[in-house]
Length: 101
Image (cartoon, rainbow, N blue to C red; front, side):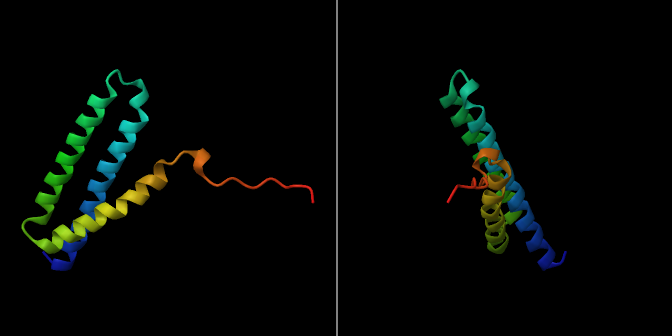
């Protein structure tokens, strides 16, 4: 396979891993009020998300540091994207009210 295509796919895979990691974090935090034992849920979620992410990095890199680096880049890029997609509507800037002079 073409090396450029392989590196691009590594970056896309990193973005997917980041979406799973940060999306899972958002899902865990969002539901924490309804959990009977929130600390156990947070810890379990952390272990699951870290396991998926590290296994994904290992598989994608295939012992090539270039692939690992681009996978990490995609992972980091996914963070603000997931934050933007999951922010509540109240956090979006509201229009300022007209004030009398």
